Length: 356
Image 1 (cartoon, rainbow, N blue to C red):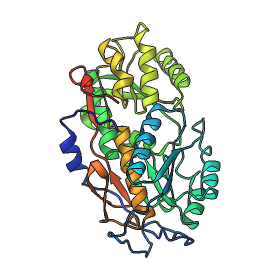
Image 2 (image 1 turned 90 degrees about the vertical axis):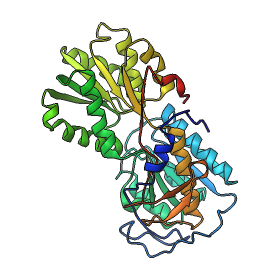
Image 3 (image 1 turned 90 degrees about the horizontal axis):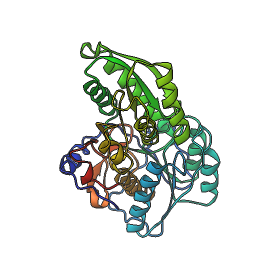
Image 4 (image 1 turned 180 degrees about the vertical axis):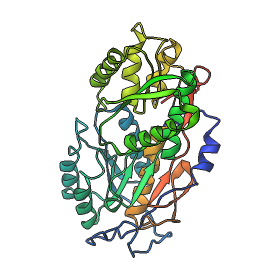
């Protein structure tokens, strides 16, 4: 697994223990989940051995998404370290219901665990509940499902801080005044919508009174559509000052468009992207700064959580603790949430220190 050389790693490991969410439920074969993931009565056995030969499937939003591929690669690495078998399967589009048939097939294949980045929190919920009723351990990662449709949610960072920090970054880059737009992924993406809610709330603060959010556009986590949406935003709002793209597909597509357009250097772009995607755009002056966590580490943490859940070491209850390989010991918080750690800001001064 790729580990970036970052001075923030120690801080990330410390802050990642400040957990915010939690749920609990039985993972016993054949037992149906309760109505609320926090209402289960099963007890974890923290001394239970991790089962060898666990079959863990990673189900991304879209199989061709580079970010998701990195995340699932980290998860498969984790499962391999535990002498299990990990695999990635998923749809070629990021529509709300595209993951449902894959969940059904994975249950039929008798996978021990499913780790899913949900395209839609509700569309996948019935199939995930059926999977849990069949004894499959369900973990969500990056983008959550309904709380009663999984036991553990492995989150990148605190959602509120992600959303608010995006506005603070764009505000700094446009001098605190002007029109901005958001280039999101899909309209139903849980993580995107949560971040955007906090963005709107942050914009309501007096210090951001000079900034106007004119539109939230959706590129559907598709490179070409995100490229076209960027073009449309600039055409519909000629005096646009900034774009926030909290999606790795969206920010790289927007940067590609801006890098060869007359608006380069005039329209600020920030959001969430990988250093390897964005390096050329930082160096050519298209982008000043952006942020992200290590997606491979996110998947790695989810892989260890899935193995602990499938082995009975955890149930998803608040306060439970599990080992996560090179990431150390992690504690489950409220509503079953585990936090990887705070995002890192990348700019011209540090981007060459990272390789992912």
